[in-house]
Amino acid sequence: MKTVRALGASLAGTSAALVTVEARFEPRDRARTEILLTGLPDNVLRESRGRLESALEENGFAIGSGRLFLNLVPAALKKSGEILDLPLALASTAACGYVDAKLLRGALFLGELGIDGRLHAVPGGLAAALVAKERGVQRVFAPPATAAEAACITGLEVHAPRHLAQVIAHLAGSGPPLARVVPGDDVTVVAADDPAPSLDEVRGQTEAKEALAIAAAGGHGLLFVGPPGTGKSMLARRLVRLLPPPTLDERLDVTRALSAAGRWPGGLARSRPFRAPHHTISYAGLVGGGSNAQPGEITLAHRGVLFLDELPEFRREVLEALRQPLESGRVLLSRATRRVELPAEFQLVAAMNPCPCGYRGHPRIACACPPTAVERYRRRISGPFLDRIDLVVDVPAPSIDELARAPSAADERYREPSLVERVLRARERARARHGLRANAALGTDELDRCAPLDAAVRAFLEKAARRRGLSARAVQSLRRVARTIADLDGEESVQLEHYARALALRAHLA
Ligand SMILES: [Zn+2]
Image (tube, rainbow, N blue to C red):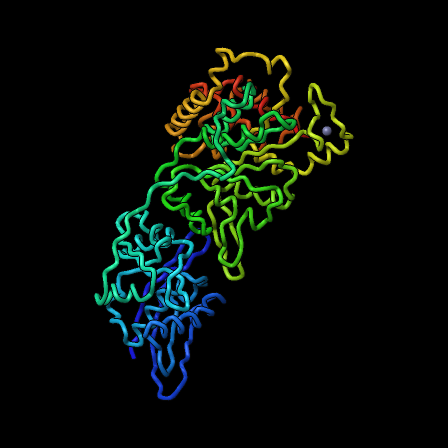
């Protein structure tokens, strides 16, 4: 009766931890089969004992009369889900003497077990493979879809069995060996409702386009305010097109979040995510939740764009939940026994009407809303939330003249290719100054270094703060935006005119 071991993994949020399954079998004559599972398993895992017994018996590895002890290490870690089915099954067969325990060493096993021994894909293959590689594991066995994720990590030997019996035959050399999985083709991640027409499809609206470039260059949050039909939602959706292509590390982060949510894109994500949840979304849907700390929309938008259309229609508690992640780039979920941290470094872009009917300030259509209704509508977005959005930009309905006007040479500056080019150069400028941190994430000390205030600017900011009732946080946000505008202009130092433009891009929403 010796103890045997097989390596598996458990997923929390978008991270995985390695779990060792220990197994020992005590035969007892004429006793029934008993399986004891210890080491902080959740309910789903406890239920796996039934599947395990059935799958083993079906495939000629019956446990027999006696007691099978299964223990999960480390004991302090709460383990969840079906991802541990395969290592549990393999440790059991080794404990019962069907497989040499030595054959299980140096490999990670992932997968859910059907009652006939068939293996089913599980979320989190990429996160599990990442941690396995860090810990010196060389081989991974997982069902095909999960194995294809693991194969995105170079330097791992990955195999994709469809059935428990195939794993055992491969390990024991008693059947056809399993082929090694090669990484799949790259895929592009865009929302299904995003046909991706160019920014140039929106006529005029040069200020809104400039605001998009500033947002993209400095990582600033952006809110468009304007009546229906001005293209504000279409403009907002194009922000992701102005962002630089993701680095390899960022692509891994994007893929990992999708994988943990059970929405693996079928390869390594090539583009930044664009998420546009509907305003009826629940708190857990947006922020994340459930026993496994399933990623919400803000984590699925990690390294990309989160678009909230009809901003005041979102439930207030849902919007307030965004404050912390907007500041720190991550979200903390408190579960019963632990806290799980999920990445949520997204860029926020939002759109709203100026009033409930939508036509306040429209040149041709009258607004039907009483002033109190307008005020109530706008108050649905709290001051502290608004303080975290650096750019609040009016997108007015164009006049008839503007609609009829042919594009001029001056419009060239606002065409998509030229905006992309300016954003890229502004980002290079910022990177040379303070590395990969976006201007929007600069602290006060860094701001003092790269946007020092002279007497004239100080007086301008003090006056603006007094007149507009700006909070200290809003003034810092103005300084960050001014820094980005100077970067887009190719200026080393931030001038008074950059601050003035930054203030103009912070429309008054009261
Ligand atoms: Zn109205």
